[in-house]
Length: 366
Image (cartoon, rainbow, N blue to C red):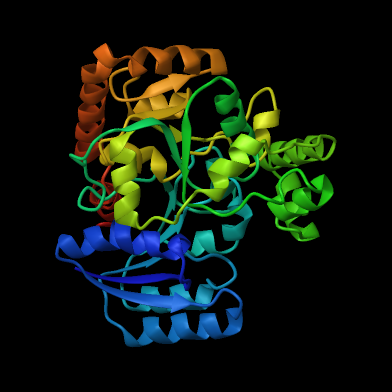
C-alpha cells in the first residue's frame, strides 16, 4: 500500500515525532510513504504544492495532519477523482477544534484524538472516528540499565505543569526533569502569559469562546492573571540542569525511571475545580518503554490501563505521596517491575500506531 501523507514542515520534535512513531511503523509494515511537507506560514504556496502533488502522484490513501490553513475542497476533489479514500488526523481537536472547521467535511473520515469535541465535527458535517494516540513498539522499548531514583518528567514546564511539579517537590518527592524549553516567562507577567498561552489573537479567543472547553481554558487563563506564581530555587536548579534528549534517550529515561510523571491538565485549567484533561503521546510512550506511569485519575486513562497493575493514578497530592511512598520501598522493587512489564505488555498488544491505523483503514476500505 502506498500512503500519500501531508504534514507541516518543521525541524523540531513537534514534526519529527511523526517519523519516529507512525511513519516508521507504516514502513516496517511494508507501506510506501510519500510525504508532502508544507510551510504553515505560506498557505497559498502550501495549497499549490499539495494540489499539484496529489494530482501527479499515485497512492492508495491520502492522509493529512494539516488544517484549514492549507486544506481546501479543490485538493480533496483531486483525491476523489483518483478514487482514493482520504483521512484527516486532528491531533489537537480537544483544544483547537476550530482549526478543522471547514476542511473536515471534505474528507472521507476524520480521526479525532479526543471525543469531547466530536459533537462539533458532527455539526460541521464530518464523518468521525475517535481513537487516542499510540506509541511505536520498535522505538519505545524497555531498558535493562540500572533504575533511576525518583520521579522523572520529560517535557516543557509551561502553564500548570510548573505548579504540578512544584507541588510534588513540596511533598518531598525527588523529581528529575528532562528536555523541554525554559519556563522563565511563567509568573513574570500574568497578562502577557495569558496571551502567550492562548496564541495572542483575538480570533482565537473568539473561537475558544464558541465551545465549552475553550471557555474553560479562557476562564482558567483569566484566573491566572490574578495570581503571581514564583518558581522556587529548587525548581529553577532542576530546570537549569536539564539536557535535550533524543527519542531513543526519552525511551530509556521512561524505562529506567522509578516513576514517570504524565501531566494531563490542559493549559491552565489545573486552577479550576474540574480541570480539562488531555492525554498526550507520553500516555502511551511511557508504558511502551516499560515505564511506571503516574497520572491524574480520569475515566479515559482508566479505559486504557488497569489501575495499580499497569499504571499509578491519583486524585490528590496526598494520594500521590502515599502511593509513591509505598512503591519506593526497597521491598516493593519487584512490584514496580511487575507493573512496568504489565504496562509494556498492554501497550504493545493494544496501543501501537499500526493497530490504530488498521482500524481507520478498515473503515475506509483500504
